[in-house]
Amino acid sequence: MNLHVRGLKKSILSPSGTRQVLFELEELSLEAGDELCVRGNSGSGKTTLLHVLAGLTTADAGRVEIAGEDLLSLGEAARDRVRSKYIGYIFQQAHLLPALTALENVMLPLEFGGFTRGEAKRRAEELCERLGLGDRKQAFSRTLSGGEQQRVALARAVACKPKLLLADEPTASLDEESAEQALTLLREVASEVSASLILVTHDRAVASRFERQLVLGRAS
Image (tube, rainbow, N blue to C red; front, side):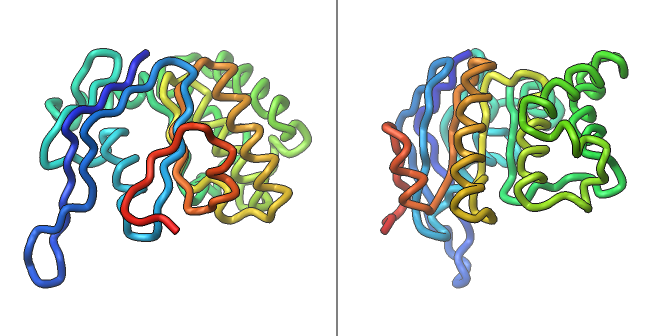
């Protein structure tokens, strides 16, 4: 799976009512297994860029090609199809369903993706064990610690073996030790499923772990 971005431009409406360019990206390409860290100060457009790459929002101009399909030329239903097939997304907040267990949260995308319940359960259990959640998989998500919730979110994001993994500040709410563990796990799991990884952060220590970086705005 390849990701190719060309001539991407996104603007927002300023308080004065004029259009203000948030970011412009002339060209970006990632192959299977590539890693990219996107960094920048608050308001520089990091999260918006991820949303555009995931097809959650549109841009003013440009192309975002995933596996040969241009997301920006597709309708909402078609973007949903491409996203469910190729993309895993880890939000800043875990966004788990509180009425479901950790295991059931991981099973959700698998069942939506056409797996039988038995197949979904086996795959989810495997991921929970892999991410150190074996003894917490039957716990309701609302009872999990912040680090455990992030692990469940990671398991959910990679459950269907996406080709592109997008992570928005996945370590922001964690202490230093938990952040280090989460980052290591994220990169390991991305490698295991041969996914390209794009990680957004404002943390220079996290960014320093990545050889390839994209800076939006004026990062400190």
